Length: 359
Ligand code: PLP
Image 1 (cartoon, rainbow, N blue to C red):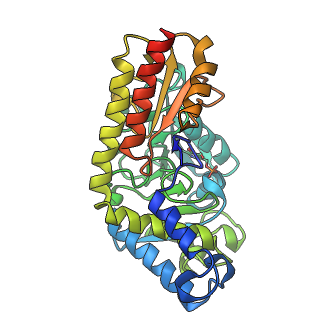
Image 2 (cartoon, protein in one colour):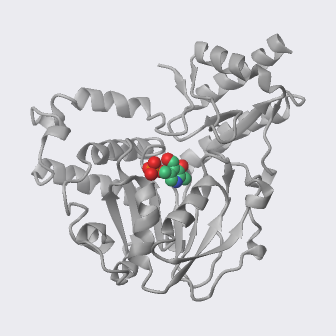
């Protein structure tokens, strides 16, 4: 297999894939795949409960939070969150720090009065809007932010203080990458396809009192309280996604949990940023030092005419998906949990070699 730096859907741990492969035709002694069985069956319900228990243990989720295994991608929840948390006429604060938080704010507009309390747009999202510049509304229904911007490669290090309004975080590209004080949040959500498992699954951790909010009139399927009451089985869940997520949680526990992952992720990012910064300008990362993402490392070559050769040669060397997002160009290496240190070592060695050969 190649070293896979895809931003998402992204690499999964080798051990998770091997286990899924072993289980494919005969899961748990059932003689059938997990995908071929009822979510109401004993085996599935036991697996689902174990996955939730493992996640709760990994993230130290307090008892007054519900864990939901939903569908629709993070994008659907850009709309569904205001539908659930905001009543008629309410406003919500949005911190815009890159592509995804901008999209979350714009998708919320049909359902809540969006107050962009801070934006990094004028700085091309190369740095984060400083906390003391945020214009928070004391009556906001919630404050939404995106701790890690997958495309722009900026990350909040530490959880911002926002006062009484519940803090809502799109953690699609940084969930499970380090220990987290879940109690600081009202709602955490993440599309699964980076640090959890297959796309199509959305993990949500929501403080139970927020489930009591009336929101707006809507079908039951959109209401988080209904999903919580039905143990995320209001309708047929993404059974395959839930199962793979469970394998990933098991794997994370075996790796030593989120403290161990944080240390590994810090070292991986440091290695790559050091190679970029130490390249004498051959490679460049434009992000302000304090806002650099550990998960998504952007870099450009000193001459964009070399981009095609870099991509072609890196792929030939077994380094997959280094092309930057089309909106920004350049390169991007995503270093999620499943990307091992050896992958980053191979990338850094390739970058040095490429710079020498193409001086
Ligand atoms: N939020 C962030 C931070 C992302 O990186 C992505 C990318 O996939 C999304 C939201 C959109 O997720 P989905 O495609 O699951 O709707």
